[in-house]
Image (tube, rainbow over all chains, first blue to last red; front, side, top):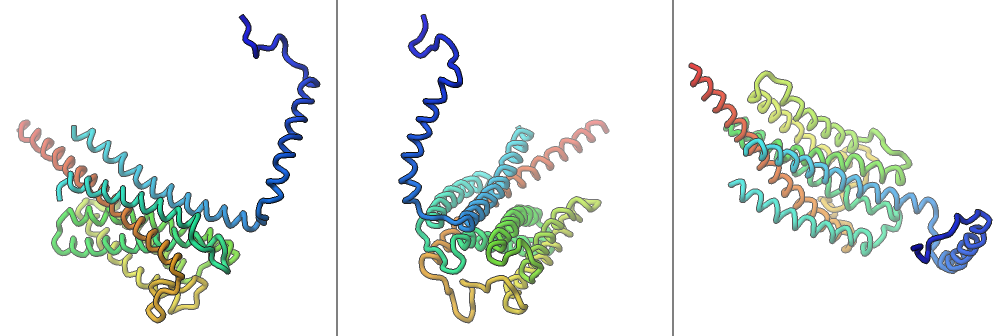
Length: 82
Length: 238
């Protein structure tokens, strides 16, 4: 038995165009006011954000990396001692 | 200190460190005021400066344990130095990588050969050398002694890094907390964020340091066991 959502045939591209355009239009209409109210962020300011995020990511990768190597060594030595 | 106590200590300090880290990340990204001239990028300061302090603390431990090791020759002191040096190297790497991210937007360059940056890079190379000399000698005992000497010599660079911005013409900002003449010049919320970040990094460092030290002790115990079993086999053969 076919499900309610099962299509009898694959839809043609032309048939999908209208719903796709309608979806885009609705999304644009919703996003417009939100975009207009958002604080203006210059590309330079965005670059500042990226540098901050990368700096904190580097710190976490290095601290995490140190912990990872310690735990790996601990497991190895415990296995050998058993 | 037994292995169980060390691990318990590492766990408690680790939990404290993670809690404080979450708190200081919240402060950095949501509450602390933005510096007027530098803007958002100044927030790198809260990860850069505590990393430098913890690295100096770690290398101080390396130098102290190295000096006492050369004096009394207790292998545990070498293990303490080695565990601290690993942490110091990790935190110095953070300093050397986060600094250029700030410098690119403030100075317009990733790197410049100004005194503080150069001395910090030198410190990093010295402690890479600390690990290299261990494996470059005929006997492990000799390697440990050489490493202790390198650890002491490396730590002599730390006061030089601190005063380099005062003694030499330097691009790097002068100290804003450990300023002997004026005292801390940071606004209250920035100073609080910095202090919490410092406490968090210190707790995490000591947590991982204890864990690493316990692993080194276990490895030494394993070496002792394998050594005694080899000599035991030798006796049986004879």
